[in-house]
Amino acid sequence: MKSDLKTRHGGRILTDALVAQGVTMAFGVPGESYLPVLDGLHDVRDKLKFVICRQEGGASYMAEAYGKLTGEPGVLMVTRGPGATNGAIGVHTGFQDSTPMVVFIGQVPNEFAEREAFQEIDYRRMYGQMAKWVAQIDRVERIPEYVSRAFHTAMAGRPGPVVLALPEDTLFSEAAVADVPKHHVVRPAPSASDLSQAEKLLAQAERPFVILGGGGWNRDATQKLQKWIEAQGLPAGTSFRCQDLFDNRSPSYAGDVGIGINPKLAQRVKEADVLLVIGPRLGEMTTSAYSLLEAPVPSQTLIHVHAGAEELGRVYRPALAINSGYPQFVDALCSLSFRNPSWKEMTETARKEYLQWSEPLPMPGKLQYGQVIRWLSDKLPEDAIIAGGAGNFAGWLHRHFRYKGFRTQLGSTNGSMGYGYPAAVAAKLAAPGRTVLGLCGDGDFLMNGQEIATAVQYGAAFVALVVNNGMYGTIRMHQEREYPGRISGTELKNPDFAAYARAFGGHGETVEKTEDFAPAYERAAASGKPALIELRIDPDAITPSTTLTAVREKALKSGR
Ligand SMILES: Cc1ncc(C[n+]2csc(CCOP(=O)(O)OP(=O)(O)O)c2C)c(N)n1
Ligand SMILES: [Mg+2]
Image (tube, rainbow, N blue to C red; front, side):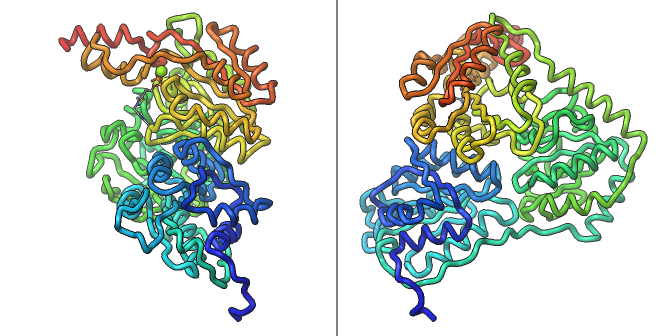
């Protein structure tokens, strides 16, 4: 049997294994540590596009965003030590965001192992806490087995990143081995008893609230669940940066349970008698620093549904813990019917409170950034993908943009800066037919602004906004609150961002007034190039509802 198999080097066995797993796009920066893989990629180039980036941080975010958008593992390839350390940010992000990823790292040959050879790192220790599984493939003939396990593990239960190190000798060695077919996606379904207990708890609920979030959903499940929630007259919110799991125009949508939460929504979650939580881990961002639900036993009756068994009871001891994939849970849940008439009024109030909260407020300066977000929310196609980075500038997006469908939002729930731009590049490459918008801060953008080169190289034509307030505004805000007037480490002297974009072969615009935004956006979108619009906002406008001056004065008054 074996004699029928062709002998291949490790690099080719690996790239054929990726093709067998259904991988059509991978991201990375090359290194001499994995030359046979690059050679294998040459052979499969018609089936698998290898997107070469300018920094592994950008590449790893792209792989993460690809995984988040498509639901299939995002594949990253980086070289030893320096590549592996640069690439860590996307792995950390993927872990906290429950995004399936498979990361390949070059490794020194086994004969040099543990000598601290050139760029040698033990990835099992380095990535131990950031990945679901880290391994090193020491035998060429076992590459298909390791790759198969990597894809199964990345997708199973709570999805996440897997890291495989590739010693040089493994890659240069040859073997005659068979490929392994594509991975299965293993997710549990709720039991009949889970469902009847959930039914009992929900039937008695007077002030129920549903929170959706996490990774492992699909479009069909989100749409089915939304219809069911609407039919029951239930109110629903989404966890931090998962607003696209529910059409924000739905009469049942009450807002996002994340950073800068609507205080009325926070109150509603706190006062709920039954919380049906499907998918979120209930981390620090979703619980307003563990204050919306008390740890370890919440006062609300918590029905916690999670695909990862180990997430249930990790922080909160739920009244009912259901280990289930979300599509599987939704299928079962939809067989129940409540239609409790008293929920209707509560849901209408929650909706009204969301609509009020999401109205843009006037802010200092000539550029009303909230109006810009509202314009985009109204004008972009329903399936446009918004890729946002981290910083206070994102607060306007979370509050004023209405997400309309599944996977229209790409964000880092670990608050990792520099995400928006590379995520937008990956989104445009993965879904070239869709409109993509990158939303970046001035600090945030320059963490990965070099990836404009990648956008230009691969023709990823999308518009990115860079919200420039001349500072690391988030940190300045916290500074003014804790140490008013004592500015330290937060000021930025920025380049001309539009000229920066043009220097790479992109399109650049600068906008200083609200009325100039729409025409600038139209020009940028029509340019057919990667385009960047710098939005110069008044630095005093530090959040959608307050100013730096107000934060400082409040702190001074309180005796800080
Ligand atoms: C990679 C990374 N480094 C540092 C931080 C800490 N941090 C959070 S927000 C922020 C400032 C963001 O600045 P900017 O992008 O200009 O947005 P702004 O808050 O000014 O709107 C910093 C430094 C982080 N979250 N991620
Ligand atoms: Mg800033």
